[in-house]
Image (tube, rainbow, N blue to C red; front, top):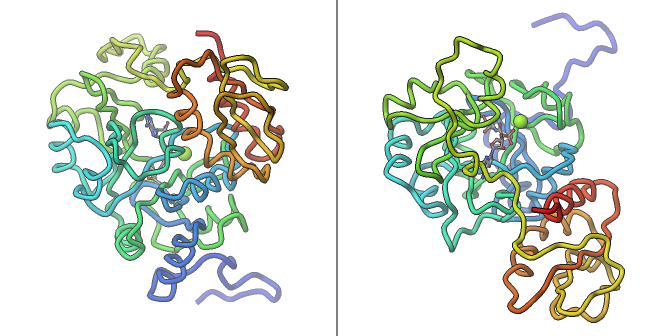
Length: 341
Ligand code: TXA
Ligand code: MG
């Protein structure tokens, strides 16, 4: 026991809870009602939400203050649960057998009946999936009976947290429950491998090494961002990333998208926001009738997909979205989707 000076904080930060019976049932209650729970994995702490609840996932971006919608990793208790959501390739089956549970994330095509919020895929046809090995993460996944979307539990642009105190310090009251466990053993984010193309691509290096991966599935190529960071290293003999098209990082609808529309043109469908959608559209998807930005973020990618699939349409008109809170990320994504191709 350490001696406390008067007035010094001796108890845990208000939202930090022990991972015991009471802690788990509190955390499960929060998750089931669409709230956020930070929990340890063997890599770093994750900021978790029910991955089937788009609104809960939108609040992850809100809490982190992320200026854009990066896709999220979804965590499962075992491979069987993963296989219900994504299409396994023979390589995925091998890697899962060797390295799950563990610090490895696989990017795989979503199944047609995938129940995971489209926001987790940020509009892509793929989903990043992981089975963590940390006993607290495992227990939370089993007890909640929910797949958990969880990026690292730090404010956007800050370093990833490996203790409950780091999370409390970075996110404070923006996360109502932080489950406390011993410090994350790996302390480095999971290795991310994209298996959606012909050749596996290492998208993010992590504690599982390229050599370990290649011992199981043979040669893999390095993703663009890794190639860039290796560019200065003249001695580097790493394999070239051959197919730039493989890294489809930004979803864009096939129909042209017109931003900040104040009228609807003939043969346009409408991406509306707020209680007064523009008149005259062949078809309308309203992101939020109440003009609620969290609801709008939750609906964004699903709405774009629906609009994009309408027949005999010339384009999508998007009403203005306020540049505040999650509106920043929504505008960022709409701007990318509207960029000339
Ligand atoms: O160790 C970890 O991976 C931690 C723990 C909590 O699991 N999570 C984590 O999540 O680091 P985050 O959101 O900070 O990083 C997710 C990474 C990003 O680089 C993201 O671009 C990539 O995974 N990613 C997620 N979904 C993807 C997808 N469908 N396609 C390509 N990359 C994806
Ligand atoms: Mg992160």
